[in-house]
Image (cartoon, rainbow, N blue to C red):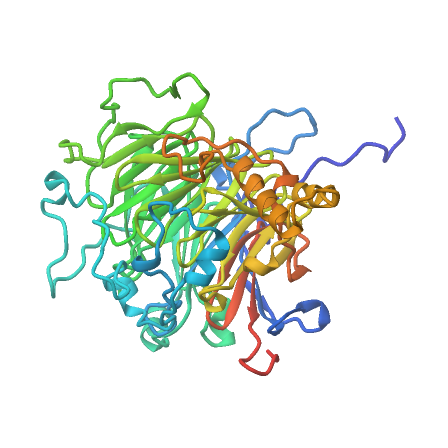
Amino acid sequence: MISGSVLPPPKAYSSAPVTSTNTGNSQILTEAGNSLKHPTGPEFQFHANEGTYVLRDDFQLATPPPHPSEAPTASTNPLSTSIPPLVSGTRLSIIITSDKKAPPVLYNLNTSVPNFSTYSIKEQEESRPSQDTNANSSDVVSQPLSTGSDKKAPAFGSTNVYLNAGNGVKEGAKRKKPKTNMMKTSSSFVSRVVPHEALSRRLNERDPDSMLAFANINRSLQWLDLTSSSYFKSEHLTKILFTKAHMLCHDLNIVTKGSNHLDLVAGSSLADIVWYEPFSVRYNRINKNGMINPSPVIDVKWIPGSENLFLAAHLDGNLIVYDKERDDAVFVPENGLANGFGKIDGDGATMLRINKSINSTNQKTNPVASWKISDQKINSFSFSPDCQHLAVASQDGSLRIIDYLKEKLLDLFRSYYGGLTCVCWSPDGKYVLSGGQDDLITIWSLAERRIVARCPGHTAFVSAVAFDPWRCNQKNYRFGSVGEDGKLLLWDFNYNTLSKPKAVVERLRNSITSSVPLTRHRTDSLQTSRLRSNSSLTTNGTPNSDEVEHPMISRTQTAELPPVMTKTISDDPLCGLSFQEDCIVTSCSVGHVRIWNRPKEGTGEP
């Protein structure tokens, strides 16, 4: 064999910024710190209708090396079957403890459509009454359903006296914190905790309106202050390194947030869920060692309006409601069935199977409720602004709309092809966005129970979608998306921006010889198209409440929406997107977090 013709062995570790030192026969891996840059130039800008966005900060979060107990050995075997740990890139969440910069409230119970009215999109736009989009944001925290209407959906589980017994915080009382001091714990679950050397001083001196961020990347969870001075901005407030668990997701509770208290839950690859309070550096483990469900936690979110309850999506297709203060117990489904999956009337429509109801009388231990919705992975879920509906995106290519107060599956929509990877609601609760492995964003109308439009523009899997509440009003919606192609796309959506479906255009072209007037024929064609693309409407245009599963609709039968801005901002796959009042925040799979300044109001300049 000729020297030099053999490929070198792969690196023992990824491109994470680590250094190594040798001590005897062992190697100690030392993690590098975060870095911060402020690059300039036209390649670090992008233009939209409102002006130019400019990159303000470019963070590189330190990616921790594998724990010494799991350090991989170099292998030259290309057919190696070793399974790497489950990872999710960089998940970033942002919270501002004061309410001055909270997003505007667009949801109004008087104009919501939880019962799926049959208004068309155009009729909704024309009949939508005006409302104050600058409502007091403090109402979002204290009364998340109050927007000037006396109608309120009941809180999740409020009708179960067994669940509510002993819950709640009395006025003036201190909020409960986790039991275990993370700095002093002897548990092998936590490898080490690295607080900033001047943590107390930095917390005391920080601006109440500062933008706090939490980021999980591989086996670390970092707490950052993104509005501190440049000297400290790249330095974490606290960094937690876990031994073997990779943190895959986390969420902050806006109900219990305060200037010196935050409740965070984080789901891991080992199925453990961590309830963490960063100010006191205390934590509890829920679903410890997978006692209730042994599969990894892919997504986790606090239930709107609840201080204690949160929902976790597991890899095996289960949605489980946990209480942060309840103990765990070995879980056996109360319906007496195994953990398989059922069908509805043999027609192939997947059902929501209740393994434990929120109304169960057995509420002494976790779980509070458990629902099986699929045999495949749940990739993402999102709560609606009306605090009643849940949108779930799954690897089986299904978008499910669930009334989680009634524990009932309402609708099941199919992707064009492949799995659905992300989902979110419009600020007024009328539309749902989903992104998937078909490289498309799909807009679904809850009023018409159908696809409104498909949005082509990405050239790889879509990884995150989000609405920009500061640029949404009664008639126009701005949303963004990022994907594994490294692109950030912005979209403006209203009735006038939608193109006609290709099938309708073809019918119109072929109808020139018809004796029916063109305007009448166009109306009939559009109506026919809508009926064909929506199995939930009967022949007289009324909702068919018996239909749950909707067929996949051809792209020729749906309108398309083009993006208003496309920009490749990363050489690595993007995985996170967040809109803030003065900036847009993006994150990629290897720890790059970028903050883009919005244009100044009325000037078009950043």
